[in-house]
Length: 79
Image 1 (tube, helix red, strand yellow):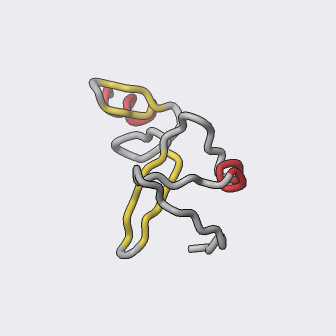
Image 2 (image 1 turned 60 degrees about the horizontal axis):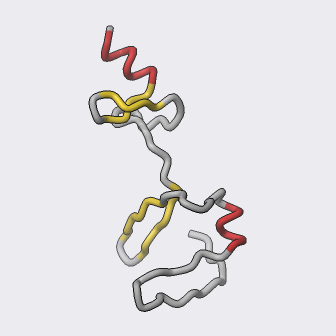
Image 3 (image 1 turned 120 degrees about the horizontal axis):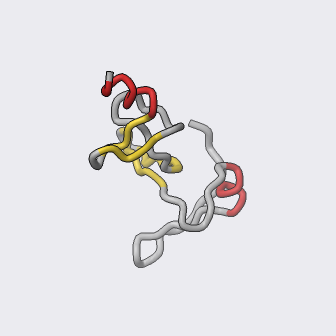
């Protein structure tokens, strides 16, 4: 994991502001969602991109019966 050297306080509502330089570097825009992961003593944020429930592909993903499925897996399911 790479250290950024940036330290930010947590406000009274539990929020942390991500610096503009990080938002730009990771293409995070207003109203984008982030996923939150934990790994032992770390909290990891990642830009949320809907992915296929079968193969984790993020391109050509559609909602099929309330599940996200890519076109390739959907074709395999329908075969």
